[in-house]
Image 1 (cartoon, helix red, strand yellow):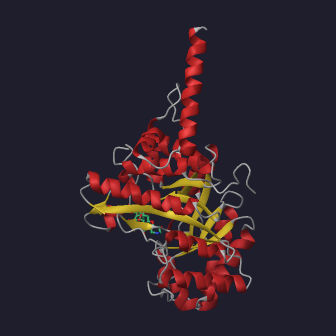
Image 2 (cartoon, protein in one colour; image 1 turned 135 degrees about the vertical axis):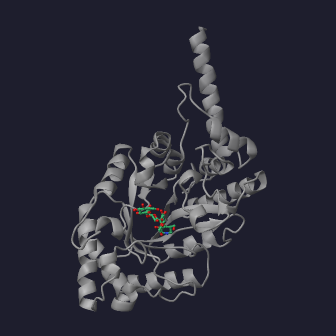
Image 3 (cartoon, rainbow, N blue to C red; image 1 turned 45 degrees about the vertical axis):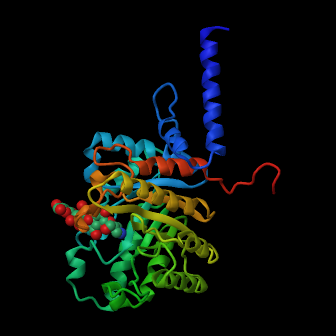
Length: 371
Ligand code: G3I
């Protein structure tokens, strides 16, 4: 047997062993290491979080932002590792309609072109929110009919511009208070709770194929706020409003992942809507240490596993992938390190844990011999 045949056979043997390990071996340190380091001979990653998730029929994506796109090392990982992209800021009202009736989509267009070139799906974020609104909008005392028209025009124009390019829209963002009552925003105060149904209806008219979501934080586990979201979605469905999904932002804290997250994801399936984990990060008190990293790795694994366990959970987006560009330290003093890559773009234990759960979790596809 020639040397090249031998090399070939050894390689096949190694790949077969790796594949068998991915299927059979339960989550373990050894497997975590294998998921992180297994590489084919040409040096490219053996797999990526995006590809591992796709094997389950789900996506694994990242948020990104225009200023970061000048960082070549960052972009290289963004484009190779992830199967889905959410623009973190560039689709928000302050940037897309900075003056009334004047729409600016260049930065978002740029991100979408990049995503398209790399086969990544896109989540549109976000159409109706109380933050990052332009001054012309917040400084005017609108009557209800006026604000109705302003909102309709914004949604119709923006969703229409991106028609066919966006898999899912966060149509309404953060409409609820912690106790489950409606947040007192300019939308709610001027238009009443009906603004939510209107926004969804206008978005559907502008892009009938896009999946339309309501997105919020602290609705990841069971509780008053997620109960309110459940009731809101049930009521919208009962009225025939086009609502397709609920976004669980999942801005979480190390050691405090809600134990009911899978149950919560599951219950929305009964309403006939999908769920997405839309902004996952898991922050810790700084500085990092090995114990916090290990707990964070376990926590990421729990969240990803919960999505994998429920067929109607369509995918997971982390709120950027590196601590270099995380929003957390600027808002939570003394906290951070919330993502699977560190500030130097090196993988943290959380990366290996995510890869491992994506590699070892039994998918819901039927196994041979079973119906
Ligand atoms: O646009 C200005 C720019 O003109 C100025 O030079 C610069 C100076 O700091 O600030 C820029 O605005 C910043 C903006 O991001 C765009 O970079 C704001 O200061 C900053 O507060 C803003 O933060 C964003 C935050 O939403 C606003 O609430 C974060 O990047 C973004 O990651 C974050 O994302 C939100 C989701 O949309 C909804 N869920 C929570 C999540 C985290 O807060």
